[in-house]
Amino acid sequence: MMNGSTIMKITKILPLIACIGSGATSFASQAAEEVLTPVWSGQAELGFIETRGNTDTRSFNGKFNLVHDVQPMKTTLKLEALSGEENGDKSKERYFAELKGDYTLGEYDYIASLLSYEDDRFSGFEYQSVLSVGYGYRVWHAKKGHFDVEIGPGYRRTSLEVRNEEGDKLKEEVIGRLSLDFAADISENATFLETFTVESGEFGTVYRSIMGLQSTLVSTLAMKMNYEVKYTDTVPEGTEEMDTIIGATLVYGF
View (cartoon, one colour):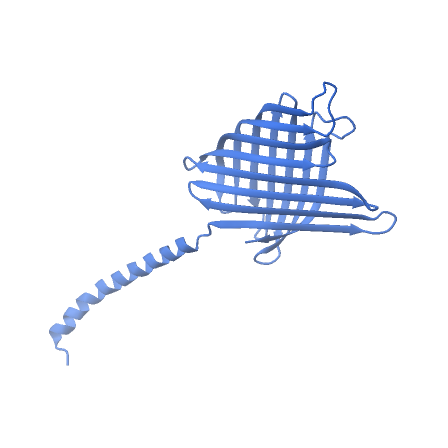
């Protein structure tokens, strides 16, 4: 049997053991949290519309976003495809790819680099590509949303489907680029999204606005309404300056 002296020693040691155990548990919890923090994340979107009757139309819209975030570097890959048919004839066909790298400088600022490529078969351009490096500032960042502003110089390469009056088919120019990226939760299950960019150079200015409302259906599945507007102030003859896209997609997050 334990005597009184032994019991007193054990009584003195118990708080120390409890303290060590609590610290070990806290450390293990933090370590597990760090391990579980996702390095890769992304979204896949898919939309499909088909109508039959006096006019048969069919459209497909797919998007894929992949993010690799290991501070201070965050890399984002975006892929988009849009296809449409009317009475059996192709009416829309557009492909877009973007690779973006953000290097964090401090709590609020970062270096933003971007490389994009767009192939719109009904725009009068064979393709348009942009390379840009600029300064980004995090105006607002919270669990419920963010607001980022980016500005800087860039380089744009544009290939026309048909040579212009000067006999040129390829245009290369230095541009200025401005980007606004805003997202905010408007309820527990709904998020408002808006991205606005301006790319201006000697041969023209391109404005693009992508507005969305995303509503969660289940944990990883959501419904998203999109309204996209692209305005190009200088376009090839026979093409429109403004393109608009309205659609609904299912979004799977991972």
